[in-house]
Image (cartoon, rainbow, N blue to C red; front, top):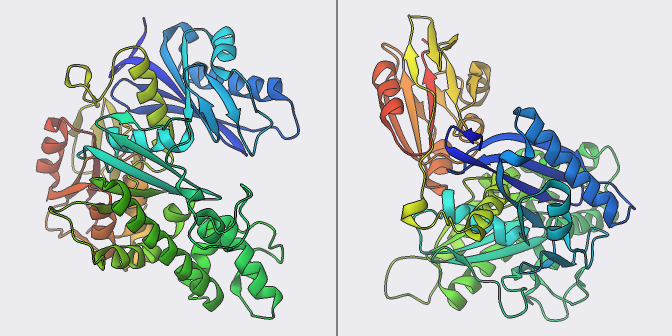
Length: 458
């Protein structure tokens, strides 16, 4: 069997309404390759299955592997699934109801294929390698076009009697409130999802209120992307700021509901809205949770941000696949630490990573990929290449390291902005700053998932 640097290879597949994302993942959870294919519209189930197969074959081929090299495959679906049968019961945004996706994919690609709800698997991924890795119980809230959830306790998903547990988007938060896509009224999703936020912005603009969002969307307010919301918040647009503030308050109270109902060790917020706008929304959410008047007997119930981002669902799908073949990553005897190429300082201008030479100012993500540091990003954000801001850390820490090691050049004092420190703290990412030579030595010696940033700018 062909192996990745961390042992056997697995496939993680995330099926969405607009794209199918397939990834090759090592046994240690390191994503080594991705392939994205657009989800076809207005096709029958066979068309979607063909697209999934296309994405899988493409990502396997991209690394010069064969399907027979894959130990198991995990598939995430946005809907209600029956994991035992590998069947999709209902997928609201796909023409995929009552499809035996597991058995069908096994016929097409071979091997073991397991299927799970995407939000459940996002929670599982965060519990394995993300912000919930130190917790016994994790509740994840994924905040995007809709709002979903997942609950993991002692390394196992809590799926409920009908495979529909943790559908937090459909708890009723306003009696006789706006109608939700599920048909009920006053759902959490109908009040705070991006779909609800779009609705409220359109209503505000239609009533005569002026908003930058009209310009950002080029006059078409049918779909307002999370990136547009972020830019409007950065510009302190009053319409978007007010509506997003209300949505953040709703999410904060939903977190209180989760805390009072199941009292998990941590609550993790992820999804497109948090990824794009979390810096503006998290202070409000955390303030509401911190004002909770019902104390517990011990500390706990912390609200964190997804460390894995878009990889959470893929990584969770692989964790589910590992569990299915009897190699649960939550059991100590099957836990595997990632391996990385060795880093060596070649001379004053270059550094070698796995024998390849690079300019000294680089960063290495948790997946092991080497990128050239964009000094202009730091200058634009902070005014100095020696000061590391939140936006730069978003690039460096993609994939969720446990520790970020920063190397500072001779006579260079490297600092993190307060927002950058908050970014790391909210994701439980440790950070260390050393002279370049010591930083490289620490990186090579460290056994956990790690990232390296070398900042030698004068």
